[in-house]
Each structure stands twice: as C-alpha cells, then as structure tokens.
Image 1: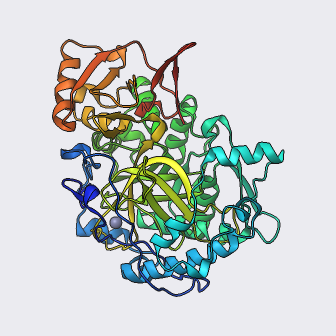
Image 2: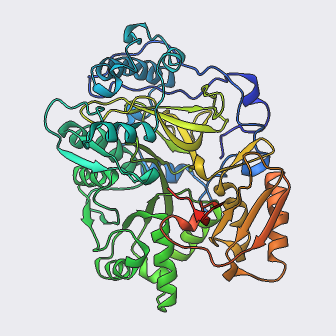
Image 3: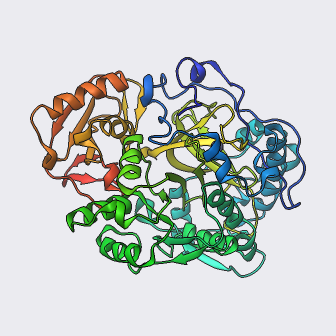
Length: 510
Ligand SMILES: [Zn+2]
C-alpha cells in the first residue's frame, strides 16, 4: 500500500499518529467535534510482513496522477477533505449520540448498561467501555427470540427496506434501513464513493448485484441521486449467469460496470471461450468497481489490460455490520467515511485496538440513525488501518482488507490471509488467478503450505511459486499442486481452507 508504513516497529511500539477517524456533521445532526482519539497501543499481529506482502501493494497498472485524481473530483469537497482532527471530533460526538440511542435498544440494554455516553471523551474511552459482539451473538439472539429481529433495530417508524446479510456462519440475519438511510444516510456515502471513482450523471451503468444485499439497495439509491442510467441483467452476479452479462454488455454498451470480482473474471473467461474479444466487448466500459474479495495488483493489471478499462476500483465492507468503503483513484486502501462509520482494528488475541499498520480484526460502529445499528460489531475480517494522508486529498480514514479471519493461517506468529499468497502468485504470469488454498494443520505453523489448482500443473511451476512466496513473505513455504479446486462464488481468490475432520476435507467460505 503506497502510504502504509508496515515495516518496523509500529505494532510493537505503541500508538502512532494516525490519519484520523472522525466525522463531519454533514447534515447538521452530528454534534460538533471535540477531542482526539487514538488507539491504545498494543502488540500487533506479530511482526509486520516484510516487503510487499504485509500491506497490499497499491495500484497495479494505474499510477494515480494529478490528472486522474482531479478528473474524479469531489462530490462534497468540504466534507471529504475536512481536517482530520475536525473529523475525529465530529465522529466522537456522533459516537456519543449513537451510544445514547443504542442503550435503549433491547440487544444493547444490558451490554451498555454501564456506559455513560457523556463520559466518553475519546475513542480510547469508547474502546475501553463498550464491548464488542459478533455475528454469532446476533444468531444466538435470533434463536432466543424466535423472530427475525435481533433488537438492534433503531428505527422510529416502519422500515423502508429489509435486507439480508450474507449468511456467514450459515445464517443470514436481517437488517433494516429507514427512509433516511436510503435517501440521505448510507446511500449518501455510496453516492460519494461512486462519484469519487468517476460515476457521473447520464452514464450507462451495468449493475450485477443481488437485490437482497444492502449494497444493491444503496447503489440503486445513489445512482438514482446521481442521475446515472442503470441497467440490470437477469441472473445477477453468479458466474453461471455470465452469458447473460455478456449479452447485456454487447447490447446495452454500458460505460461503467458494478460487479463482484469473481463475476468479472467469469465474464472474461467466458468471452474468451466463446471467441469474443474482451476488449471489444468492454469497449465502451471506462470503469469497473468490484466487491466481494480483494483484488491483487496482478489481477488488477490483467483485468484492466484485457478489458481495456481506464481503471478498476475495489470496494470492501460487509452486509454484516452494514458498512463499507471504496478505493479512491490512488488505490491505497478503502476510504471509510467517518461521518457514517467508526472503524477500529483490534489485536485478535488481546482484543486491544491497534494503531495503523497493524493487522487485526475489523470492528465497526455505525454513526447514522434509522437503521439496524451495529455498535462495536466485530466483523471477523482481517484488516489494517493505513497511516498518513492519501494522495487524493481525502482525509477520511483508510482501511485495507485482506479477507475472513476464519480463512487465515498463523505462520511463525504472523497472520496470513490467502490474499497474501494470491498477491505474490499473481505476479507469475502462469498463475494469475489460479485457485489456491492455504492448508491449516495447526493454530501455529512453522511454514506456509499452499495447494495450487491441479489443472494449472506445469513442470517446475510449484518450485517457482514457492521461491516467489519465500522471497515475498519471508517465511518457509511449501507449494504443491492438488486436485481441481472449486471455482464458485469468491473461490477465485481461493479463501478456502481444507480442514480434515471426520467427514474429510471441507471448504470453509464466507
Ligand atoms: Zn484517497
């Protein structure tokens, strides 16, 4: 990641000055700023990774230039570039409001009984006083109540929309959005990020999302507000529907594609298999924005080159927690709008907040009202806050996301996501996008074990892959070809871990 400082002692030493998290009181409902934040330092997730594998290398084929950055521009410049300290103060004030609201909700009543919002003077106070919770806690609440509501619904009237979460742990939960959220809350933050990445009035936009996902709903509202022309193919985003997407691209000639990474790969491969020139198919498409899994620089370069895109942007976040952020044209992490969400990264073992540059579990708190309200929700995603200003000029915090914690392995004290191996392997032309799995044979391992999709097997390729991984990650690595690996939703990034149990190997996936 361009601006991220990973090397060295940041995680072990204590808090470093951070780029801030805070929020503008953009529509007046947020109290003005006060005070700082800062996360108490704590031990990081082992020594930071050396070289490029620790943080995500930025950019891929696109080097952000002044021209690119200015082309994309600001939707709300005053808010997007507000001084970081001012943002932090506003976010803290909003956090106090959020706490006051949450204390009255059934799910939080007991959890927050000891918390006095007015006494929260810093983000450190907030982290010390407010407990985290996980998806498992919400599922337990669903079961206990026997209803689809979990007691985090902070609406004053009937919901304008009810959305499903993604079914992590095998259980989708429901979340509610009020009218404000759809008109001027979360939809507004999405509008900001779309504009940041080149969306403009009148653009023809192909959208490939499932309607049950909150991002679809927010995108719809944001695109409508911008005045874009939305085109939706039948069959949504699953790779088996990519023929429909190809027909739509050929007929509707969109200028922008909103999709998931797996689907974009599937369209590319299907087009090649059908003898369709991808660059011709995508000729009118200037930008693509993808969600669902991290995109390695190698994948980004391949997609941009073969599809002839001006740029490819990645989005991250979760339907669990109802939060998210997008890359700006600098491709240096995801900007999280701090008038909408407060994001922390906690040490997985100590549960203490980590400073920028250290990897841990991402914890989110929503700062807008009229919605299912997540306060210190542990997303169980591996991420890290990024330090320093962004080249784009936006002052809102940036976070990098690596995948699900459940898919990570710990090697010699370091927490590694499949993305880390993926990013290295995608620099080897024969292995770009080839499915992989990381093997876990213990909670703490001495070497990284990678299995490559057997259909890509070629002489000496495993040895070459192992050499690259050793050099890139600085740890012992073993690489072998296995059998054919599944290519299903999100499988492209191969975040699967085969776990041997009584029933044999199984594939864990979000
Ligand atoms: Zn930026």
